Image (cartoon, rainbow, N blue to C red):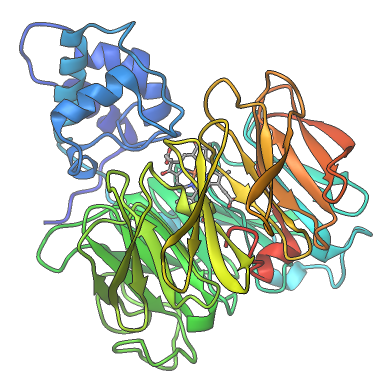
Length: 520
Ligand code: DHE
């Protein structure tokens, strides 16, 4: 049965009164004090995920208590063991596993109602209003004060800075020509900006708690992956009009959060992995999809009905897996998806053509495959990925799916980057006492050749290269942070621009050409 819509005020009240009435710690009060800021007053998510039974299916209550007490790798949440008693933690666990009387729906009608168009396509300027190379611009997310800076990648000067939605997450996505940038926030907003006119164009709330977004290779559709509700939402890339809401379920009543969605341009499809159902979904967007699509309908037209499932435009091809996929990544021609569950001891390789797992990969320690890169090593394609739980980078032969090398790092890293024109790959050390360093790895020898410390004591993370690969840009991930520009050959600092907790940065050319060294 579909949940009924409810107002936000009613939901906050429901969230705070839905706790069991037993005597003991006041779970709603503890939740309001300790959890609401990140997970939302109504438990619907914010910076942190929604805390509802619908989204906690894979987490046993005992593990939930451990997460509250000790936190978990690669999240911003602090451990609460020192500030909350065991009884208080147990009361919080009981609260978050208590269903809300009304989970709000967020379907086509709600999405469309939230949509705002600021600049219609008919009013766009015919040429850029700035003198920078449109292909060498960077979109830089400043998470500290929820702003975005557009940087001229030749002069390293900001050309536009604007307020963004709260808590953007995941990579910026560009239209195939690089003119428009789309950004997604954890609370479901998708915003479109014109990088020629330097103006916001449109925005829409496509979900309540969102993972990430992808733009189709033909530039027509923006696909949004949601944690809440359990949907994928297709938007018209021109004005963000909602086209279709795809309910994510196994066809037998069990629904699922979406781990992430990416565009597989050579296949003319979107590929999504699911968090609560061991399946990958391929969704061809046409108009000329490869024959892998099942039930594809030609002559795609916008304005489709909500609820159409496994048929009609944007049909779903299911690939059944024997484990979940929390984090995943593709080879350059999108023939293989390499993925792992957070709890798995191995990664899995799925051949997208035959639609099944073809190999296991030796990837313990929570590989962060989403930030993996590929390159040629001794005439064979390899993938390299940092691990979130262990201080190492794994290098995997993509022909045999065997591990060639584990490169030891000072601590676990989050992001890895390279570029076709540099012999080096850069990886950060995001966690632990050495979070202020970055390793530079020689792709020819798989050895660390330099360890950089841009600002002692301050987190240094996330690298992106200029269009030509000559410079590497690094974030000093702090409120009084900076963007540090390095010469990618000499590894010397050439410029530093103050910024407010800069997180991800995305070069137009590298992203639209699907450079092997960057995220896609
Ligand atoms: Fe991310 C990308 C998932 C926590 C900053 N992160 C992604 C993507 C996924 C993902 C699936 C790819 C989306 C895309 O680009 O389309 N992130 C997760 C998690 O599951 C995890 C571990 C837990 C969670 O809170 O969801 C997580 N991520 C974080 C953070 O705590 C970070 C460091 C700070 C923040 O802003 O939330 C963070 N994630 C990022 C960034 C990217 C990203 C900067 C884009 C990387 C890129 O270069 O493309």
